[in-house]
Image (cartoon, rainbow, N blue to C red; front, side, top):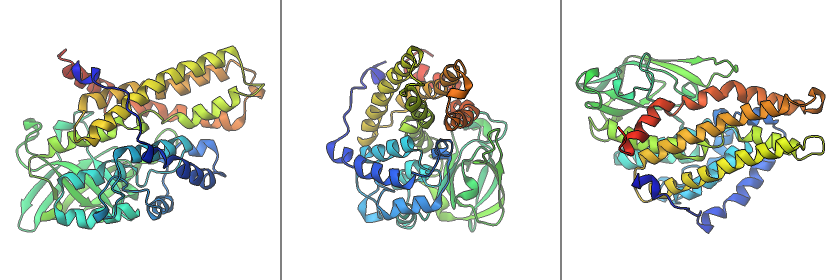
Length: 385
């Protein structure tokens, strides 16, 4: 229990907090004509031009070294930007995974040639990555990877399938966890990470339309895809260690707290009006805010650990699990509040935003690891299993 007990209140350094005002001003202007039910898509929203504009302003690759086109800033600087993007409902889906995971992964494990090629393009918003982890019939059992890359005279020959791959149809590259030796029953042994150009012959990407009408999830097929030898990231067989470290970035950030925040803000604005203010609404606002505040503090503490080169896997799983609970509470509780009122008194835009978030909220506890998987990790970290 020591690891979790050691999480202390962590302030954002003043030089990083100073980014908030100019970013907020830019977003206010950029999104002033975008309705809430569209902004609620945020990190599922896609706009390559918006991402390129962030690159022009130096707001992509903020934590990457200056020599590769990055900002050379701390993880807290990116945290400030991420909070503002999500709170505003900016369409960040095109670069989100790239900036959060792919760039730092390549920086840590990639060769000098990989760093020099990919990182400057990431910082300019010219290279978008998706991550290939999940596979059909595997659920959240990431270690049961069957997609295989076999070494040959030209490099690596890739065959297999990935699923639930976010924005693969819009991305240039995928970083995939694949088997390079052994069999599926070998579990974590023999796994490696490779970079795949998604425009390569033999790659097929098929978007999956969900119940909300969105198509940001995809299934991706690899049929004898020939990759160069330098497609491998890090050491062959080291993929499990690398992907575990990568997931700490995915599970601990503000996107695990703020997926429903545009809806909450829209409802809160209504609840502050004369027509919307009720004792029930005041209690609900307090209930949600008193859960978000400590989770944000925990998330910031994990950023501090990541800044110091640690890999807080258990702590990140805890934040993701608890954060998902609050994200799913928000639409359910707001629906209870609004539908207890006269229908004619509730703004249409608020109802449209609620409708969208309600449809996508069940996916919050699937992406990034299901509850059962996360709670198993937490239990092991606490010595309970």
